[in-house]
Amino acid sequence: MSDHYIVGVAGVLASLLSLVFLYYNNFLVRFRGRSKLKRPASMESPRGNREAVGTTDVIIVGAGVAGAALAYSLGKDGRRVRVIERDLNPPCRISGEGLMPGGYLKLMELGLEDCVEEIDAQPSQGLLLYKDGKGATLPFPHVAGKLFHNDRFVRRLRAKAASLHK
Image (cartoon, rainbow, N blue to C red; front, side, top):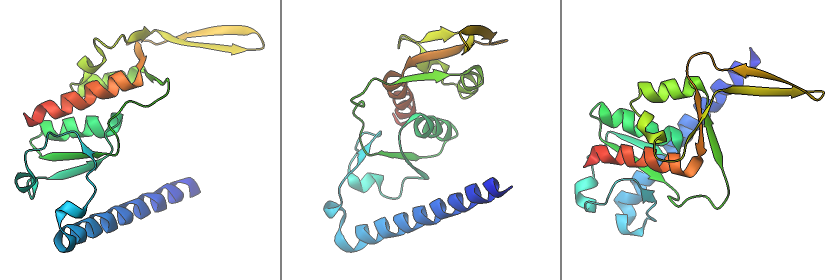
């Protein structure tokens, strides 16, 4: 029960910090001018600063797996979405990603299953558990999972979300 309270408090604090950030950012824009702000990378192509002001329904901070998928989902529903990402360059490390069958089913539900195509994604048929030198196989019952390179997957998600703005 105490875990729920901690998560709830963390969520409330994160929400309050987001509001403070948005207020402070708006304050800077009004009183110091837009040109004095550092511009973070954006998934949208710049169409001129004047056109972008006041035309956003939702701002998403972070263009990773969750941010890009949320941007696509909200954009599909007709919302005007702006995604802000600190750095759109691929990470300088080897990073793999795996979708369990439930995650892959959710990806299909969102209409994003094509994001794992043409990125050399490998099917994952189940899990292999080891203990004391013995192994046991646990196959996935209905749908295979997917294993792939994280950066390729995130780039496909971002491109799919950005395609809604064209």
